[in-house]
Image (cartoon, rainbow, N blue to C red):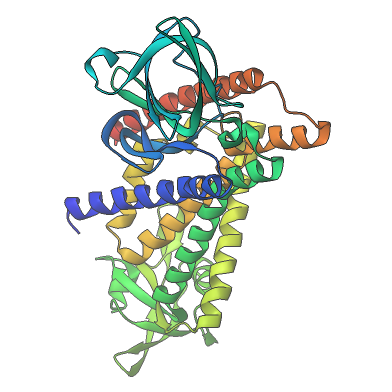
Length: 418
């Protein structure tokens, strides 16, 4: 597989994992009536942007995540104030556009000075025009236009904080849940494509190795070892070989439909006893029920491994080389992509599952931390001060960025050191 194909696979994988996660937030936010201002893939400067309905969809430069920016998650910043001169556009006696500048150049605008306003609850603006006060209702979807930039107002009932605890909880939880569902679907696809192992099949045979001297060939299917039927049990085969250092092992093979008997003597090769051949599997087609069972077992096993890894982080039982940032992840992903489509599918499933579990950790700035704040709100009957919560998330995000910088620096060092 060439470099362009591998690069496209990595980009597609990242796009699908992040997009589906953020789509979970987007979908449930819109179902709850929350105004989603932006749906972004990546962080940093915008590469591409377009607006559909109330939401702006953007692709950003740094491929390290994404976000669905909902009104009210951070305190709303109003671009108007009492005493300010503005231009308004009316439709059905309601303000649909409120211009803070350049209104002299625009036709059909009513210009005046703001005496009073409420753009979150009562939705009105009192404007002084030619010495007279006029009260205007404001459309719930009115736009504030400042320096050519449009910002839709967010009434309280369209803000994240204006919804019930359950609606907000489901909106936040939906992102990780989508990644869990994607992981299971990918594990299922892998189970269907990889097949069910029936026998062990030899891979590439190393030149000059005991396997080569015994005339073992790539593609030989192992039927038995020392009279013991081995089936697809690779662990048992390795165990028998490692117990037989310097001692002949009797193999019954199937080579192209012909049954052969071979004798091979395992030897110490590096840190272990080997015969010098890679191992693979001969498989049969997977049935639907088997695929579902295997996908569930695979996902359960990977979940246990991921949680074990996080436990090591918590207790400090790790080295910096045990961690991988974007550079290390891309490098390893490229190696897996070059091995074929099936390994890439399984690896994508693992990353999706990892993304879900990582986001559910109660670390500030992650979904798990936001869920904790919602649980606290439900228990105490009132929300945590939004400014304090925002500060906690900001500090957490800064710490995550520092960790990512450190891990990425280590990845680059390892890359240059081979």
